[in-house]
Image 1 (cartoon, rainbow, N blue to C red):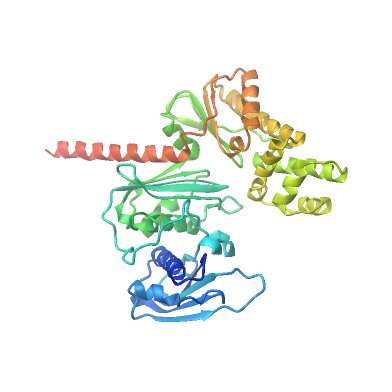
Image 2: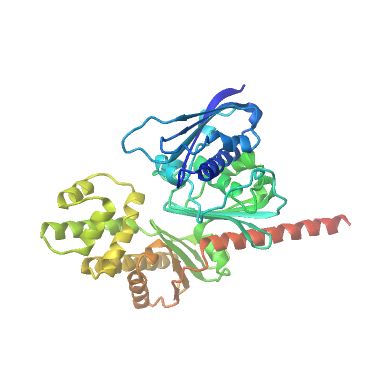
Length: 454
């Protein structure tokens, strides 16, 4: 039975002009409609509200221009609240649907991302306005949709058979909860945005032949079923890989090899034959993860400098990043519980301090490299693997060259000399390579079956 559900969305405009208001509203509406599969005949009404600094035109006009001539529309102003987000347009669609409350996809974009970070989608580049007919299926295909995600963010791409990129996203928002569970609604919002923002126009999910997801943590088996229910993708078209597996594929699948990604933690797999083995090592008590532990130790060093009244670029950069103006505020911040992702977000402040010549920051980055080397050395020893090629990348190495130099030095001392620290090819490159190989295998299988029938 259908019930009336509210679908929320918000965006912002750069200027109070008719063109800017209509462009931003149209972009938001198209995201909301595509993300939820809304049809005009199922809509009771649509309410538009703007902050009082947006009055160049009625935002409802954007929906009329999209062909919604029969729906009841209403425009109004938001109440004036001190410190509220300026130049903001909000939309509430009252939609008759059989969906449950938790199945509704609410969309927050542009400057309104900060109102609901869990619903935010970030495009890598500004996109031009969509044409009015943009929701019509585009005559493109077959397409490949790939996504790689870890707890510090994700990157994704939609490409055609010739490799042309139709849509690409990068975000620092995690698709996982703090407990490490993949949030399906966040993943769906990401996939919806990729389909909607494809150029030259949005595409229908049926045009996507291959989907490859390179994930930090393995999802539930139910995810493939959910993707099939939502987008119509058959199970044989959806491929789930670990991030090291995807990068190993991009590297040409060398054997023996260790492929490691150093981000929030170390995610590494070893190939001694054609099967891979996850690298598992006990984490030291004083450095249980990577970037979060770096920030914890950096905060301790910064606090010591502040209480001793010593000049410290590390303290300056960390206090700015954490919005703690003095030693007492920083000490208070340290006593609070923080998620690993929140700590990792402050890691670039340590790198900036090292660039400014801070000795404590330099030592901590060197130590991070040694911790990485120790993890790898212990893991290989446990597996009995001797001198595989090492391919290591990730945000921990991207922080500062000191980390890579320290890592290479420590591995060299352990007689592990064949080490490649180049960030390319990426995990996303591996997902694309896997998608191409998978399509080729499918075509060969079809060709073989056709020959057998003949």
